[in-house]
Amino acid sequence: MKPKPIYVEIPIQANIDEVWRMTQSPELHEQWDLRFSSITYLPKESEEDPQEFLYETKIGLGLKVAGWGKSIGTHHKKDGSKTSSLHFGTDQKISPIREGKGYWRYIQADNGIIFLTQYDYEVRYGALGRLMDLFFRPLMGWATALSFDVLKRWIEKGESPRAQYIRFFSNVLITMLFFFVWLYHGLVPKLIARHPEEISMLSQLAAFERTAAELAVSAVGILEILFAVVWLLYRKKRHLLRLQLLIFPILTISALLADPSISLHPFNPVTFNAGLWVLSLLGFLLAKDVPTAASCKRTRKGGAS
Image (cartoon, rainbow, N blue to C red; front, side):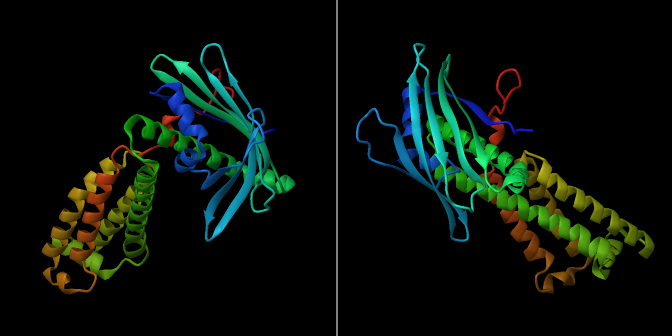
């Protein structure tokens, strides 16, 4: 079955000429579009010729994909809307995309415009390429939608794409860190190793017998693992960070009440939880109004994509 084209749509409170400028100027386009690291327009012999360009996309570890493209038609309709059609591709084997076509459309609306895109592409490597595209195509759709939201916020609120992406990826790193911290501390010392200090601190704090303390430690470990999963699935990260701003001082005080000498240990709960508390505070401040792909519509009217 042929995969569906990628479709992304977002409303922007701006006039159509401003959005056209921010998307058609290569030095502006490369700033907000996560899919491209640089875009270079090539000289045209006449205004009627298609606009050819070269692009590069850095994928990490010093690797990058370079490709070509051209605007194969720009149409201005009577209702004021505009359409820019594109043809693009790359000869580099590292890219799963061989060649594709699509368009950008700018539609007048009551309070600004509707900016949308639809594009599709052919993959290389035959059946293997089509298998890889099951994962790559959703990633491309997500990157397009996130980029559209960054553009919208740049135009409407004036926040630069660079600042937005710093906040976005900082939040991703903080999310993955806290996922790892809660998963590790719930799984390794409490469920796998059943570390004696975990059992001892809980038995002293709650006056549990050893068997009851072991069961309680296991229960706490399961709760921490579940909280780690919540970090991955729950979208409103500020709620989790606010909760942690309360949890880490409580955990620190509880550990000191159970065993004051633990504060003398290297990498002890006092310094560890203090570091996590500060990181939670920074994450709480950074997590406000973060760009998101969820702000975009991903299917055409009628459910077709």
